[in-house]
Picture 1 (cartoon, rainbow, N blue to C red):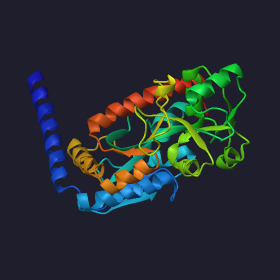
Picture 2: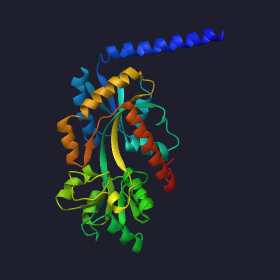
Picture 3: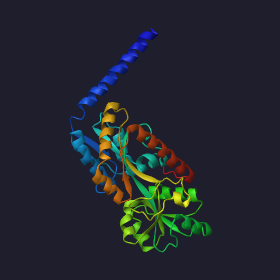
Picture 4: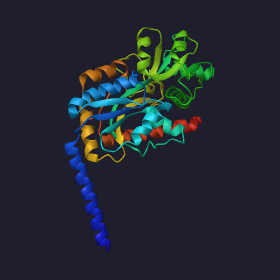
Length: 323
C-alpha cells in the first residue's frame, strides 16, 4: 500500500514537471505585466521600463510596466504576491520593498521570504556618503574622526524614519562608532536643505546626487562597492575608510509569484542575462554610479537572502518598528 502511495506521488510530480515544461515551451503567448511598486516617472520606474523594452524582443511578447505605488511599496508588492503564478505577472522588487519594509512592519499581507521567486538581479546602485561642501572632511575616515571628537555635531537628512537613507545612516553609525543625528523629511525632498547647508550629510543611492556632485554643489566622501566606481574614480570606498562591513546597496530585481514553474523562471532568467549585457543600458547605469547586472535565479536567491539578513540585523539593532 505504501508503494502504491509513493508511486502515485511520483506520478503526480512527474505530471506537474511535465506540465511546467510544456508551459515554458509555449511561454509567453500573450503580453506580460510587470508590477512596479513605485510612481511613474521615478528613477526606479525608468529603469523598469528600460528593462521591459529590452525584454519585449527577447521574449517575443510585449512587456508592460504597471505602476502600483503606495504604502512604502507594500500595495504593489501585495498585488504581485497574490497574482497567478503563470509567468504573466512579474514584479520589480527593491532593497526597500523586500529587504527593509518586511522587517519594520509586522502586519504585512505578504511574506517577502516565501511569496516570491527570484528571477534575476537587474542592477545595483552604490550608496554615497553625501556631504555639503562646508563639511571639513575629505573622506569618510576624516568624518568619523570629527564625529568621534564631537558626537552628534552633524545632521544627516533622511527620507523618513525607517527609510533607506535613514537605515543606511544607522548602519554607518554602528559600523564606524560615530554618532550622527538624523533629520527626517517625510513629505518633502531633503536635497534643498542639504544644498543650502541646513543639514550637512545624507546617505543615498548615487543617482539623486551625482548631478550636484559633478557641478561641485555637493561632495561624496565615500561609496559602497568593492572597488572605486568608474564614474567617480576619485571617491574612495567605505572599505578604504576601514568600514569593509558597510554594504548598503540599492538594488532592483525581477521576481515572479511563488509557485511559478521553474522552466518559465529559467526562461525569464536567461532573457534577463541578455538584458544585463546591453551596452547602452550598462553605460547608463555606470553614468550614475550603478552597475547593470543579470544573474541566474539561484544566484539572485542567494544575494537576496544575504541582503535580507544584513538589513534585518541593522533594523533590529536600530530598534525601528513602524506598526
